[in-house]
Structures are given as structure tokens and as C-alpha cells.
Length: 231
Image 1 (tube, one colour):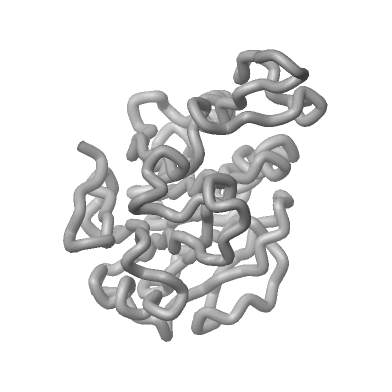
Image 2 (cartoon, rainbow, N blue to C red; image 1 turned 180 degrees about the horizontal axis):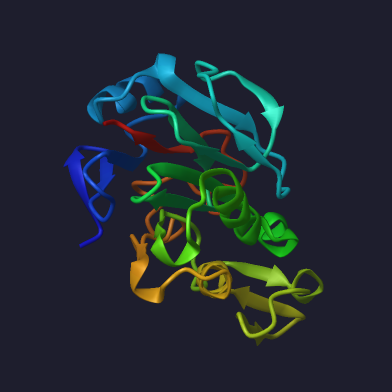
């Protein structure tokens, strides 16, 4: 298993090196309880770095905590600073966690349909390579809870750039496989397939435990996904 539950609503990835802590929240931790969630992972709210997510491909290089304030528009973060907590909020989009053991650097991406189409995955890998000399083949990558193909019905007009990752249904609709596209983009960017881990949670199917914008028709709550260098 690539992740385990530490406590009710606190999920921890086990695929990363011991000096990396990564995990995601569930319904037990709405925005008002983000600090409690972080405490459960032995992380601090004061060390949290977040961005204003805009469904693009910009990557923010984190060098100091923002204490949860979202002052920069971006959909990915990277750092090599011990103690900083990179945070991405999702409620169907794909949270993607990155770690380079050799260079002790980490990254985090908000993978929405628009950002994935725009190339945010190759962009974050390029930034980690250029800034930290992280070899893509050495990266460990984890995929968090998100909407899966079983539940992600979209209009066929939105499918440009996703050839091979959907199946059509009646009335001009199709079911889109965002996770499949993410995996292909990772491998195409040089990540080894056996170093990609997936929690296999569908937010729409598991709406009892996780927030789903689509299933709930517009919830304002979000899953908090975090990664940090802790030693």
C-alpha cells in the first residue's frame, strides 16, 4: 500500500523517503480544522506555503512560509527548504506529490483539466531539474484522491489534448481519465512507471469521506494535500 490512515481523516503516503512527510485530509478536516490536520501529521500551520490556484501551469519556488495566505497565482510549488509545508487544495482535481531523494527536493501540483492540458506536469519536472538538478528518472511521485474516469463525465468539446484518455457516451458526452493522462505525462517526462504510486481514491465515489465539487454541486470545502521535508 502506498498510503495509510494515521487517524480518522488523516492519510499519509508511505512511498516517500523517511525525510519526506506527505498526506491528505478528508471530511473530518474542513478549512476551519486544517491546523488540526497538520498537527496530526506533526507539521505546523505556521510553516504552510499555499498559492492562489488558477488552473494554469505556473510553478512557485517556495523559500519562506506564507502561513496559509495565498498571495501568488500558481498551480504548483517546489522547495528544498527543510520545514516548509507545501499545500494544494482539491475537491476533484488531481493532487500530485513529487520527491527527489538524491537532491532532497520536493514538489506539489494541482492537476486540473486545464492545467494538465497546458503542461503543468512537464513544467514542474523541468523546474525541479533546472533548480535542484533532480533527475526525472529518480523522482518518486504519488497521486492523491481525485475524481476518476468512472464519475468524470464531460462534454466532448472539452477533450482536446486528451486523445486516448476518454470513452464516449451518448449525447456528445464522454468519461475522462485524468489520472491516466497524468500517468502518461509523468512517464513521457522521464519518470519511471514503477516509481509512480496512486492512492486509487475517487472523490466522487467516496464522497462520504472526501469533498467532491462535482458530486456536491459546488462545495466550497477542499481536501488539503501537503508535502514537507522534515529532516
